[in-house]
Image (tube, rainbow, N blue to C red; front, side, top):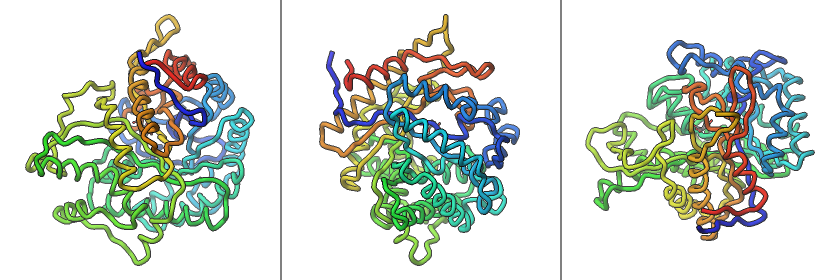
Amino acid sequence: MAIITFPKDFRFGVSTASYQIEGAYNEDGRGMSIWDTYSRIPGKVRNGDNGNIACDSYHRMDEDIELLKELGVNTYRFSIAWPRIFPKGRGEVNQKGLDHYHRFVDKLIENGIEPLCTIYHWDLPQTLQDEGGWKNRQTIEAFVEYSELLFREFSGKIKSWLTINEPWCVAFLGYFVAEQAPGEANLQTALDVAHHLLLAHGRAVQRFKALGIPGEIGFAPNVTWYEPFSNRPEDIEACARISAWFMEWFCDPVFKGSYPQILVDWFAKKGAKVNIEEGDLEIISQPIDILGINYYNGTVSRHKEDHGTFDCEHLDNLFDKTDIGFTIYPDGFYKVLMDIKNKYGDVPIYITENGATYNQDPVDGRVRDDKRIHYLKQHLTQISRVLSSGMNLKGYCIWSLLDNYEWSYGYSMRFGLVHVDYQTLKRTKKDSFYWYSKLNQNYWFEM
Ligand code: BGC
């Protein structure tokens, strides 16, 4: 047995997102989002599930905050639903939406839990989508209007902000792979959307700084580790390409003010390019205070001619997988974080998501999710390695507090430390909940 320890000022938390947990989709003036629309298109989401009710967290705020207290976390990462604040995306503000989040944030603070707020976790107001959504540069203006309102309203209450969650998913799953809303499949469109998301991020950061809002701001990309199968240059290059798709495509513009050449060249071969207007890269590369990193999986990959978009083949069967099919590769967590430090320096980092799906229901009132505990131990050990290596890592949030709406998988995939019965909405704490609460008290665990 080895004892894995964490510094006492380390922030432990859990993450959720509005559409995935709130429900109350048509209450208190909320407008429709692209996920309300997309989930209703037959065949897009498993079992035709939608977020109408989800975990009903909109009505169960007190119960969920009790869970956070018992878990003993000092940080809660959640997102605000844009269509609750601006039901039409811009213009008229819905006071009831603001009131809801004020009550919620006040309660977190009363209970000693620091809010870590994501401004955009994928629930774009449908009215903006009707005008082209993220394809349309005007959506950037609407995002800035929405962000500015949140900054002014919650100034002094929310001190840690993330502009956009996983822009890779929004752009490429939404507009290229067609696995998420709005479900288009065009590489050029995806590159335009990615660029607009980065601009929206940069503009919001500029506004945050100009307004002198106290606190820290950044964004939360998702990264994956691709270990080259061999040291042959073509394997190394194939891995560099696919890694860059997730990380450098979003982090280079933000930290360096340029797009990674390796992919600019690759996309050019596929007939697509970034449409950059004058001044765009200066806006995107505003200095940020924090970087959120979401990490779930990694794999070993090698070059294979004419294979997929990147001529890259993944040897996923080398690894155990969680129930959603994500490969389990804890070492990759350490490697990707050290890589970020090498490439982008010492920016303070929060792990804003890491976690595992295991689809278990309670048996005699108990969920014995040993596999989840093991996954968390494996990944938290990598966090401890990274901290010991002097990396500026401030906190770690598990995805997720609750089982919830897993996008195109609907309710079929359970990531929570707390089980949710979607018929009764009853919450049952899993074994992993008790394990994490112990870590939150002790700052160490046995591996
Ligand atoms: C997203 C979450 C999602 C999780 C698990 C991330 O892609 O930010 O909304 O539920 O990973 O797939």
